Length: 286
Image (cartoon, rainbow, N blue to C red; front, side):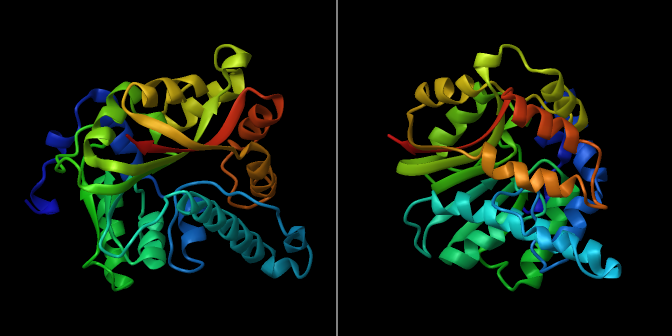
């Protein structure tokens, strides 16, 4: 069945999923589009690393361009951090980019490993855009994007050497997500997520975390839920990296950017008061 033949109604299993798909089908946020225009790699996530604050200096007429390029450099650095944790990948391996957005992560993975990548999204607009990008980059023979639900992909069992989520797990129930990943990963395969999660020691989600949920129509999970549901589904953590401090500079720069969306204050407040964490978790399928 080709992507065009798949009905959105058969992919979207709930009213909530329909609302999320509608959000991303309509989304044309400059903070996602302008950054991708820098080099043709369109990511849908945030950044990590030290900021080159000199971008705020120099000619005023090129200030916005310099900030945009720096934000894109930081989000590209975040993608590389994730790829560093996928383990050994060969050109014959298949990977899945779950919640693939406009496709940047899949293209970077293929460029780095030469492997096959299947991207999955419930947004028709994102899937179409990402497949156009794969064509433009000349890799559509190995990188393909599908209108599929990450909770029920229809891919065969044991298909993938690795699967990742880059800031997309907050749209699904983890108790439904990880059984599907355990099914699709081959024995010894690797799962990696980079995600924002609320800190269990803080208690219930803070006001700032609740603002983030409302902004993105998502449901940020507590940190403990990831480890609980992985353990229940034969996914054994191999690495846990707290990226909270590493992502704060990105948000501080973005707050001064013309691409700011108004949610920057909530992220900075939540990260700095300890109620929110930015984690990378890599786990092996046993």
